[in-house]
Structures are given as structure tokens and as C-alpha cells.
Amino acid sequence: MPPGKTTQKARSDSARAALLKAGRKLFGKDGFISTSVNGIAAAAGMSKSGLLHHFASKAALFEAVFEEEEKRLVALVAAKAGEAPNARERMRQGSRALLDALNDPMSRQIVLIDGPAVLGWTVWRRIEGDHGIALIEATLEEAHAEGSLARLPGRAFSRMFLSALHEGAFSIIEDETQRPAVETMLDRMIEGLFAGD
Image (cartoon, rainbow, N blue to C red; front, side, top):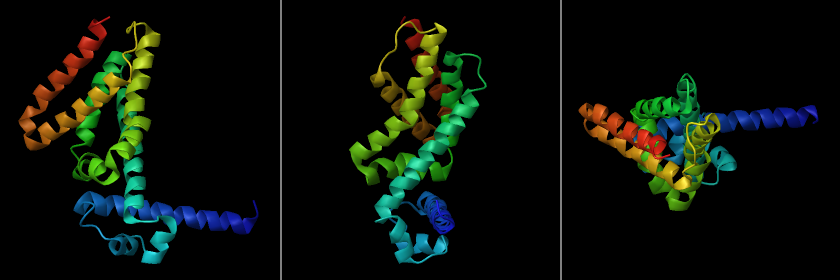
């Protein structure tokens, strides 16, 4: 690639990263509806037209921010769960790590509150499938390979388990004393899956 094009791409990547960072901060703090394109552009150090050069609309920027947040959460959960000795325990540790992560007000606003409403059912499910659900399925495949899970339960279980995690996070947000009960219910789902063999 010619040097000029490399520099142009680096500038474009840098501008996009600045927009994603500013978008996460403002969407996470103020919510999608209360966040303006002008506000994000200013926070990223560029004009509104500069923002619209990279993202066609506020909704398009939010979708990119949401997907980056999903990737960040999956990486965080995978790192925490990776410390466990087997797939069953990785599911337990991973579920606790996600509950912790979703206790962050910015993540909660982007992933749990605005995500489904702004993106719509189809896009939201696709992104969830590519990241959170994919991690659950990968862990179940590891359990199958280890021999601790005789049959893979299919995508329906992964979707239901992630939904349970989201609802558990909401329960804890509403009343933090519910955390032990939420963890117990998630553990029972995991134990039921493995015992069901």
C-alpha cells in the first residue's frame, strides 16, 4: 500500500476509534435518546459532518458502539472464566463475571436498556448471537470435548441462559440483596444441564 494511503487509513481508523470512545461515554451516560450527534462529534474532536462521514446516522454509530461493548464484555468474561479448571466451572465463573460487568451503569445502559430498543429485534439478536451466545456455545462445546457433557443442548439453551443472565443482572440492579439468589438459580441451570445427561 502506498505511504499516502497508509496514512489516510490510519487517520480514518483513529477518527473512528475516537467516535466509538465518545459514543460509548455519552450513550452510556445519557442514553441514546438524550445523546446528540453534535455532542458526540464535539467529544471526539470533530465536526458533525466528520462523524457522518464515518457513520451514516446516530443509530449506525450506536450499533457499532453496541457491538464493541459486546466484544469487550465477552473478552472480559472469557478472561475471568478462563481461570476455571473445567467447562462447567467456566460457565459458573463466566456468569458471575457478566453479572459484575453489567453492574456498570454504562454497560447496562448500552447493552440492556438501549440495545434492544434502538437496534430492533433482528439486529440485536444477530449481534448477541455473534458474541455472547457464541461464547456460551463455545463453552458447551468445550464441555462436550472434555466428556462432561454427553450431548450439546443447541442454541435454544444458550439464548435462554443469556436471557437469564440479563434478567438476573436487572434483579441485582433493582435490589443488590438478590445477588445470592440469582447466582443460585444460574448454578441450578448449569447443574441441571450437566446432570441432564
